[in-house]
Amino acid sequence: MKKKIGIGIGIFLILFIVAGIITTYVDGGRVGTGHEPKYCIKVVSNNGNKVTYWGLGYKVIRYVGVSPKEPYENNIGAKMGSWFMDYELPKSNNIEIEYGGQTINVTDIKDIGTIENILLNSKYNGEICDGINTHKIILNNEVYYIKESCKEIQKGDKQATISEEDLETINNIISNKTNK
Image 1 (cartoon, rainbow, N blue to C red):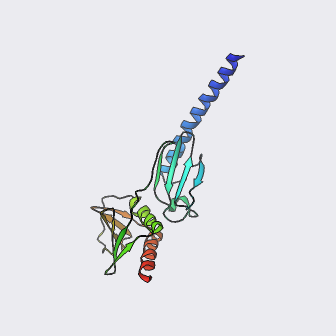
Image 2: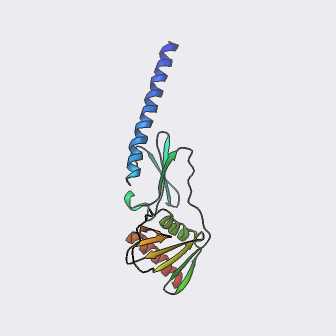
C-alpha cells in the first residue's frame, strides 16, 4: 500500500514538473513576443500600475504604461523570472522637463511613475533620427530627449519609438503642470 502511494505521489510530482517546464516555455515565448502569458493567474495591483502573472514555478511582472484596460500589446515593461524574483522600477522624487522654453518640475508620484515607465521600459537601439528635440527630460541624472516629429525618445546615442498615447500622456502631464 505504501509503495502504491509513493509511486502515485512520484508520478504526480513528475507530471507537475513537466507541466511547469512546458508552461514556462510557452509563456516565455509569448512574453518575449509581446503577448500576454496564457497559463498564469493574473493579479493587478491596487493602483493598476503593476500586473503580476503567477505560473507554475515562474512569474511575469509587467508595468502598465497606458491603462490596465488597454490590450497587453499597448503596455510596456515586462520581466519574467522565478517566483522569488523581485522587480521594481527605480523611484525618483523629481523629474525635470524642459518644454517650450520653460522648465517644469514634476513631483506627483503618479506622474513620475508614468514617465519612468515610458522612459525606462522603452527598447532603445542604435538608430538615431534627425528630428528636432521638443522635450528634454532629466530623470535620475540621465537626460532623455523626445522628438515629436520622429515619435522617438533619445537616450545618449540610442533611440526608442514612443507611441502616440505615451507622447500624449507626457504632454497632458506637462499641460496640467503649466495650467496650475
